[in-house]
Image (cartoon, rainbow, N blue to C red; front, side, top):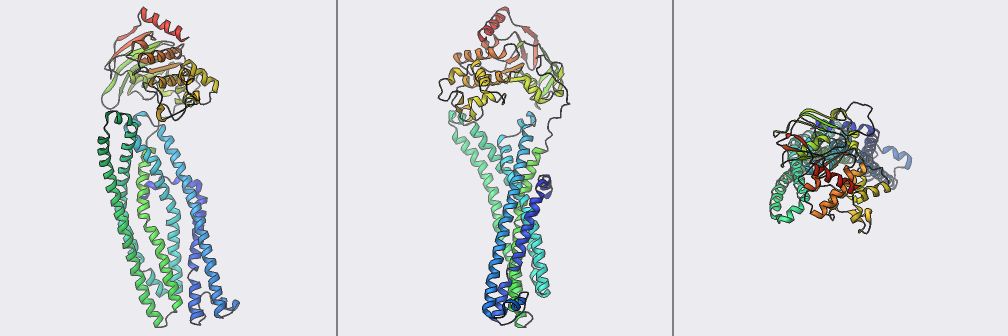
Length: 584
């Protein structure tokens, strides 16, 4: 169980001083708690029974032995001890939990950064909701476990050692009776630690599946409404929610059963102490005040036992979550590329030699060869599933070929730094994804350092201003989730403006006009004419309007070029020239 939590020990090292300070504050609270019963013993033995004994008996030489003086001293001491205990408790909680929050933030940052850099092949196998659950929830469970290690386990062990030492030093007979119940309490806790860990692992998995389903449903809410299939999703949610509920109820049952058993074990030890201690008072082996102190210590000693026993819940939760988070961190990132001097801008030549790509369901491309010359506009045609989009994904560096070589300006993509590659290639997808923020923010996404005038020029060239001029805030209009409120053609023009602002020498167009009506398609093609001008362009399309921008077309069939490539006809070239002039 601790093996997975130990994996994250490096995140606690920068905060070790703070954590040690928190442990020290807990020790201060322990010392105050050890002193707490003695004012009561002073009142019982020195005031009510007229005796002068015990650790506080020396006070009689300072304040006198009168009952009023002893009562005053006892009351003042009780207030000071309680204040000190509360102060140490407050500072300890604040220091420990602050360190825990910082540790969690660092873990969450590293996991998110690592996850973003994992290859697309990993994300294709994972559900968005599951990954979201691991970052948002599991990291908090790790925090709880790590904080409890310093705020509960270590202080608890120190408290037990302190109470046991003091009890044995006060009277070894009472001490042996008092600590005799400790093994029973720990055996009870050990029994439930194993059961709780299994339950927590099942509960976390069920919660992850539920989060995945909810995320998927919200992403597809338009489809749900379009088909009116809320009932189907209700049924699926009910099944997943029932699994999560059953796992949660099992966890609740274990926690509810555990507390009474722990209290029963503690009651056995307290009853034994009261019986034997009372017998000792009757036989004058020790004073009533001493019995009250030892009984109080036993009660206080049970509190850290109870707190540590609850770690049988926190640690399994943290271990299960740490296992899930570690599964992300254990995924190997893309291998580092060697450092090399590269020009600021590529010429745009693309070569694919004997490329084969297999997603695990059979090859999508098989011994594929293609050369795209600088400034050429190549259209990949063919039926769905023929591998057109896969070619674009390979050129964009989203996937690595299973076999073969892919070159940009004669340089293998595997040897090119990713940051340089992404500056050379701009992509316009079939469905442009817009992030939360303004329209200008989404255009600036391609180059965050771009100034307002550059964004405005890109928006004008992509015909974005054609519709933003009618909006109250223009380019500063804030978008709803995923750009809701804009039409498909408007979203595509924002995506084209984004690619224009990137000013990359290579442009990839993946069915950018699919689903648009003729009027919207005409506007998007006009904007694309600006984009592909003086750039290498590779596009996939079924639409003749976009094909007219191509200078060469290739037909794909089952991942293989059919009869190689073919130059565009004279009429097609004339159309391309006219489209370029219209764009200019």
